[in-house]
Length: 538
Ligand code: GLC
Image (tube, rainbow, N blue to C red):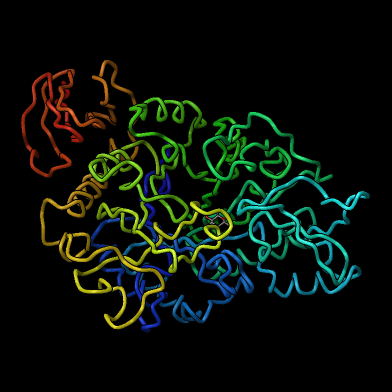
């Protein structure tokens, strides 16, 4: 398989509000990220993905864009952005930015014009519909953030569609002027030197042309999101077959830049489909749509059930020939892995993330084993929590703790950060963990360095090791003469695993077994993971 940076590179997600506050307003900003690039180079990731920093009223913390080609003053300006890109590139780090095509802010000039009257030039840039003859909503679609997906506009006497908040009206991508305007946005950032895009809700941009009702039934969405939304089969509002053409066209636009200068840019799409066949279509029939659709499959895995191996095998079977999967164990929309899998499994989870075949996304703070931070109700910020209590995402979006001091070096100690940090002094900060050679951070860094040097991890084959004891997931990654066995004990009891022959432990989650010889068997403590380099003959 051809190796590209995006077939193995580690993409580090930065929640822009929460990484570093350079100007003391309690909210992270672009200069605050630039200031921390040395840390990321030290850690050894390949690229950073920045969540939206564009002009926005911040109803959904930047995913409601009111100007796609400018930086919100909260985060800095275009000069600060250029500085960040130059500083990142100077350290060999690529910069991927968020691209939010499905909707804009209701304050975006396009929507302001669109809602100004039924004859407005941009009326058709969004979805405006009359009530049904009986006065009811245009269809049964629901907002992911709770309630119907339609909002009544008194002034023009019609409803408009919003898959997310009512402050995030959906763009009509069947209108070619919308498509061209949004492609122009991509060109703007490519011209500024970005290394690719993380495409927000990529599956939703094409809807059923007749906006028909979604059927209700035993949908594949059980167990996630809000009950009524789950009960619908989202065949008309998500994943319409016409969506693939959009991403093929988008990919061609990006590829044209690559052809100009020989650089490699990434298109990584947020695709949440549980159906692996539907998910895999986002690569495009000729691998000409997304380089990578996000691989959220492990997020839905229950660590107690010890079925992680089955999930990985199913994904591997679904990935088209010539492609690899992306893997995600944490992001700004999900509980932190150290909380969902349990703190005792944080390192095993990291070992899994960074040794599977493909390109992982590493969420900031997970390299520390950082858990969700408890948010007192009066400090809730996510509007989703207000709409559907229990669904708020604040707990996983709290500021990065750099030091054991109050406010963790994220912002000055006397400033009120936009979300509270977790308790200080428990070792959950960068400085403390940098000083400890056995910390989760030291483990993650050692693993990243090993990964970088290992052809088997970068581009080797994946093969499940049969016969592992219950609770253990073990697999081989091999390339040429290099053959690695990764063994993960997701359970609390110590156990042993048969290997094919002699070898040596090259890395263990406890950072205490490197170099240990093994011969035909390797023992695993509870929640321990090891990488064994097997001696190959010939
Ligand atoms: C994506 C983002 C999420 C945002 C939503 C609406 O799912 O990851 O944070 O709220 O899209 O843009």
